Image (cartoon, rainbow, N blue to C red; front, side, top):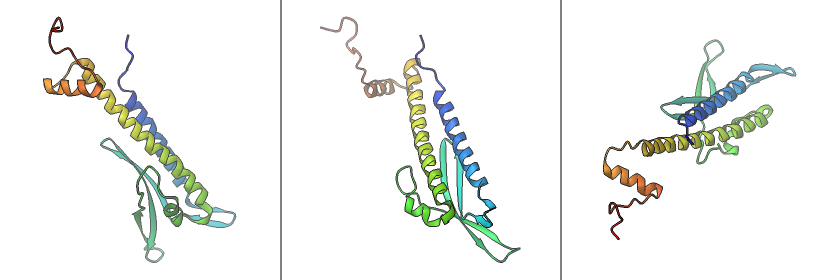
Length: 165
């Protein structure tokens, strides 16, 4: 009977990444200079999702427009996140326009959850690798096998058959 099936953490991480990209795309699509109630709504905030080499980066950036119309350039500066999974509300909403404050904070709360889920998925992935190494008996050295035994709390009978008693 196989209780554990390898690969579930990778599926989990792919799903979290897909959700983060979808949320980012939806958020950015709603900020492309649309006119609502006769008001031009350009946002100075950008929500960026990047993944690479096993990591997930979900960042907020502040856009600045430099130059005259026709020759304008855009510069983006990443906002400081601080500790934890969530950007500080005060720092993030400082750059949000009045009409978008609620949407920005809702998006950040959802992204904070996805950042946390990503970290949980990475812990699952490490546990899967450790589990597979223990169950297949693949160790580089006897010391590594003993170290893993100690980590999981397994104390083998090291005195041989009969227990030496």
